[in-house]
Amino acid sequence: MNFENILVAIESGIGQITINRPSKLNALNVATIKELHDALEKLDNDETVRVIIVTGEGEKAFVAGADISEFAHFSIEEGAQLAAQGQERLFDFVENLKTPTIAAVNGFALGGGLELAMACHFRIASDNAKMGLPEVSLGVIPGYGGTQRLPQLIGKGRAMEMIMTAGMISAEEAYRAGLVNHVVPQAELIDFTKNIAQRIMKNSPMAIGKAIKAINANYKDGVNGFETEIRNFGKCFGTEDFKEGTTAFLEKRKATFNGK
Image (cartoon, helix red, strand yellow):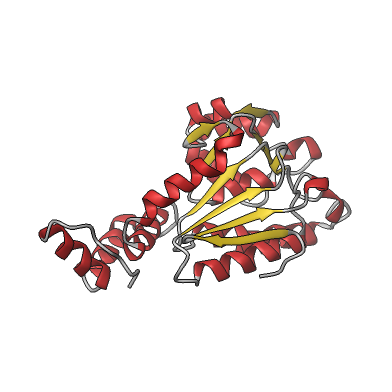
């Protein structure tokens, strides 16, 4: 896969996407959002890929925000379309991937960068990471799901304060708030994330995909998460992974899952 703004590598079942615009602190523009969608779609459909890691190039930034120069002169209609298309193409898309997707947050994750990290299934941060949604300081609000996902992750009050002050929080503050799962030295970030990926890869890809769907259902309006869980629990019984997992347990051996 050849792209202009991202790097994609697959090794030992782990797909890694690196946003590669270091001169712009890896800021998201429309072209990069499209490339991320295309790469994520290909990795999600690749049966050899069991986990996806998303990170940024360099030591300064995961993604330092959206590329403001692209929309500074947009009309009301163009602004709404920008948010709608971005949410559909990338942010909602990431959240609903069947392949576990981890954000390895190295450095600044601001605005659209934090929104991308929050759309991933969970987050691991380097100890120098800084996170925030500074949009109101530009006279706009988060438009890629930030006003929805941040309260889900850290609670309404904390999210209100972060968004209204446009301030940044440290990696440790993000960990205490539940925004990130782990904080590690930057030099260890990718290896640590890959270690967690390898633990995930020991389990059934089919079951993990259905677990993601059931968990996400709890946050969708008009969807009964319990019913979604029951339905997907039942579907597991018809999979090869279920037969292998239960047989391996009864035979006292490690299961070998094929994701079917």
